[in-house]
Amino acid sequence: MAITRYNQHPDTFLTMTANRNWPEITSALLPHQKTIDRPDLIARVFELKRKCLMKEIETNKVFDKIRICAQVDKLVCAELPDPKNDPTFFETVKCCMVHGPCGARNPQAPCMENGRCTKKYPRAFAESTTMDQDGYQIYRRRNSGQVYTVRGQEVDNRDMVPYNAYLSKRFNCT
Ligand SMILES: [Zn+2]
Image (cartoon, rainbow, N blue to C red):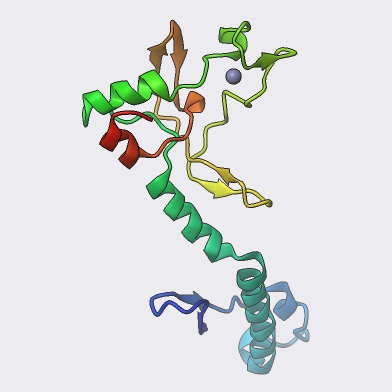
């Protein structure tokens, strides 16, 4: 087991535990050997895995992505707010931040071109915010089961244009 600090923040430690079933270990055992007989092998394989993990963290910026996505969730929302929490805010968002509706619900919408929405709505549901390979945000759009009627069509979180909740509330607009 090793504890590795993966960035400068003191709270960010990561624990990795050796797995005796790693194929690099089991395949190197002689017929009569058990994993426990080969601490040298375990240590060597573990060190290889640890280096791979560190490379993954440093090269692919795995944790940076998670951190950035968490920050994005604080700043940008692509979901309808709960009407019970703040009915006025809900109305503002419902009124201003729903795209279209377009697609099959409204083929004549101005965003439609060759039967497709040029803005790529409705988007797919997403349990959490992620980042694609190019660093482009894919916003959280949970499938809450809530459907609302906007401009005569049923809409849900797939139709939401991302907004900043603080500014929208502060200025009662989006
Ligand atoms: Zn559209």
